[in-house]
Length: 230
Image 1 (tube, rainbow, N blue to C red):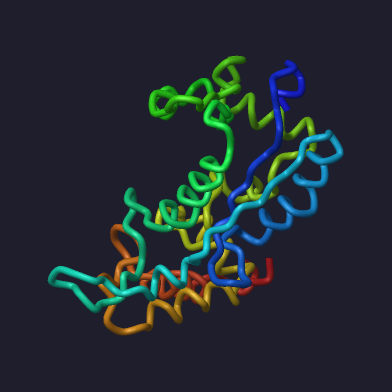
Image 2: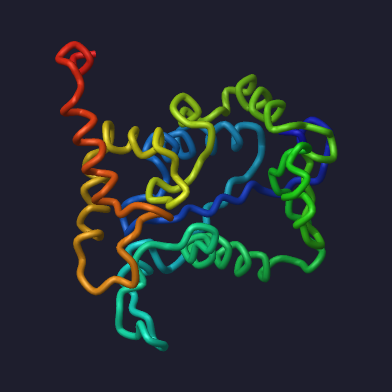
């Protein structure tokens, strides 16, 4: 939107969709629907071509892949490590880099890092530009810009961040939303948790997914009838 407003060169909007498996998106369902039914159509009506990229491998492919060397050789790779996410590396960064190589060497990549995210801005490389920083838009400014244009994702109604629904960095309110509203996806992670021979049983830094499931079940059991009805 800033590119269009300020006449910045713009060829297309590129979106890389991480997949849970071959048919299920890694996006929270509300966000996936927003992307395909609201965001992409609206961008295209603005004259912006949208390109969707996907990796060959999915989260399940990586989870069930085996370690090929070292003391844990033969074990399932299992849950990604917080701060060292192999899903982001293999399912998002690699497809984007592969696509970039097909473009002219001087192609500029606009990346949505806000003016008040100075640490992240310092990591931008050659041919990477933040228009939010250039026009001094903070995270809150960017949020309001999207809201005004009707392009604010519905996930911000229950969280203040976006991410895969199986992200190890997911906060309690994100996990609780998944538990309450998407039990079929919740069950898929429990199925993976039950697989034997994993490198680690931990879903995040402190808990297994089974621990989180048990905690939510206990919380529900302790609620009064009125709270459950609400």
